[in-house]
Length: 165
Image 1 (tube, rainbow, N blue to C red):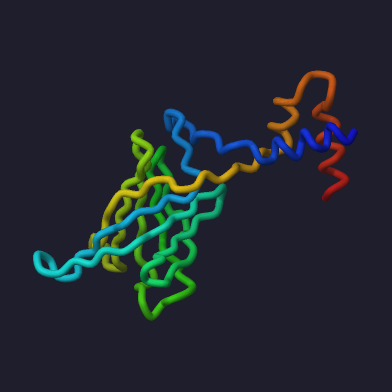
Image 2 (spheres, one colour; image 1 turned 180 degrees about the horizontal axis):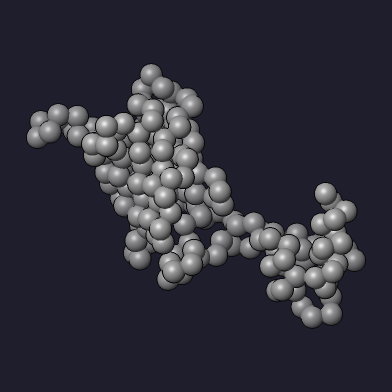
C-alpha cells in the first residue's frame, strides 16, 4: 500500500502536459523578459522586467523592476493565445490597474507579450521566455488510467476520493 501511495504522489508532480493543439508547447511555468513601453511615441520609451506565472487555472503577473503586480483574470483562451484583464494588488502607485495583457505562445518556445491600457491602446510589448517549468496537477481519473494494470483500479481511486471529501 505504501508503494502505491508514493506512486500516486509522484504522479501528482508529473511535468505539465501540452495544451490541445499546441504542438507539444506547454504554457505552464514562469515566463520572463524585458518589455518596452511607449511613453511618448517617437520620443520616450521605458523598459522594464515582467514575469508571468502560468499554472492550471491560476495566472499572475509581476513587474519586478516596477515593484507591482497581481492576478490576471482569463478573458479568452484560443489555442496558444491568452487574453487577460489585469487585477493588480500591490504597487498600484507605480502601475496602472485594469489594463489588458495578451500572450501568444510561439512554436519557438517564446511568448509574445502585449499590454494595452484601459482604453485599449497598445502601450508595451516584448518577448518572454520560460525561465521556470511548473508541474501540472493530474486528476485522479487520469492517474487511474496511467497506473500499471493490477496495482490500482479506478474503483480504488474513486473510493479514496470519497474518503477525502
